[in-house]
Length: 216
Image: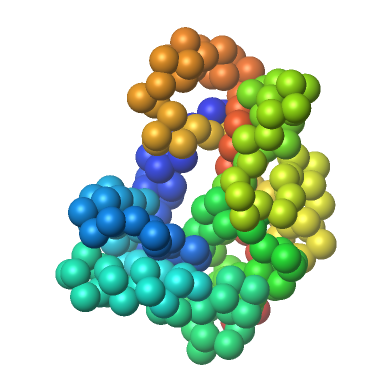
């Protein structure tokens, strides 16, 4: 099992490929300067720079803002649970759903929608908080939740594998990863060596899937 930089690993897997990035914007409720800065440093911007990328997001306001300010204009409006309504085709080499599945009321609908967009070589990347990550578990023991305000569930490794199989995928790789923002903290610098040695305790799951029977 590996412990990756989430951003670096996703960029490595997507570089030079046709990419669908689900839930890709999300910078709402911020001042103009903050929104521009976050957008330019975002994973979606990195994927736009290195791949032929199409984004899907549920915030029309954020999509319009990024287009109107010349940040990126490759994002369409859509619901991750209703990908079948967007008129997309199975032409993507990589489909990225980063830190979105934990927000969904019906994650299986997203998985079915993604599977319909897979060709035989497509890889699907899903990242999500790890219920049994060490820091998450310690916070739980101390009655201090660190979940996001819109999260409705947290997954562990068997959950990811079971969900994948139920919706026609098999797991190519299951690792953990760290978020880019975490690297600036003293806690991360102290703990990096530990998680490199014990990656199963990392705070974010990183799953790479392939479709068992892609619909083409």
